[in-house]
Amino acid sequence: METKTIKNRYDFVFLFDVKDGNPNGDPDQANLPRVDAENQEGIITDVCIKRKVRNYVQLKDNLSKPNDIFIRQGNVLAPIIDNTLGNTIPERQNNLCKDYYDIRAFGAVLSVGEKGAGTVRGPVQFTFSRSEDRIYQAEHSITRCAVTTEKEAKSQEKRENASTFGRKSTVPYALYRMHGFVSAVDAMKSGFSEEDLTLLWEALLNAFEHDRAAARGEMNPRKLIVFKHNNHLGSARSGELFDKVQIVKNNELPRSWGDYSVTINKSMPAGVELIEML
Image (tube, rainbow, N blue to C red):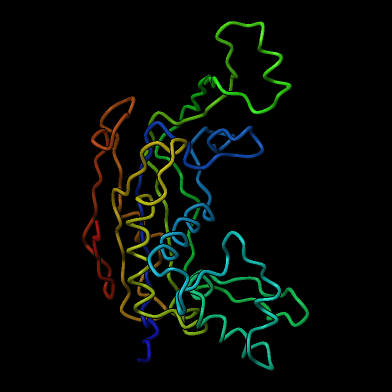
């Protein structure tokens, strides 16, 4: 069955929150939750959310084509590219796009290996997610009664109830906002289809359900607001549409989703359809 490449441009706003967790640690800052150094607003990188989308698709389709995942742990990329059928770069790109969901969606740098296949620009792009307010980077001391080495065990022999100490960093609560874009122009090049788009929305709404960990606390999607244009170029500027989603703080110290109110100006420019998926 032949898939149908998307013909419409989309812009979207994705709201999600975290409670008592570290949604995206910064390796340059001892894995503390990422923040804007100037105003202390929380930040989550685009690649962090893309990873969760990839993981969901991998779990759902079990790495089967056409929804295999190219960028994943354990994959050695150069041999995959070299072994892809095609005598030219466009042919290899086309075959890689057919087999891998994340290449069709997000694109990939394929210029590695003996053959190389250039670069594919994906139609789906995310911004960094940014918290609505300043976040507090809470640090907690934790203990462990077990030890990892014999040397460590001997050093604790003379200490009663000795424990190993560690640190854990969390955000008490934060609401994050991410903007996204789906280009029909780039979709024509990668083959990103209507089925792929449906899977993208599904993956975003379920991104945190199968990514639970003690370090990430409680993460939940709260709103997915999609603006569908009636053509491939778009009928309005994305910034104009994003401004129609306003968030108001109802509590000076927000500690839950209920401490915010989200309003959407539903008066759309001609040629734009508003779709509230959550």
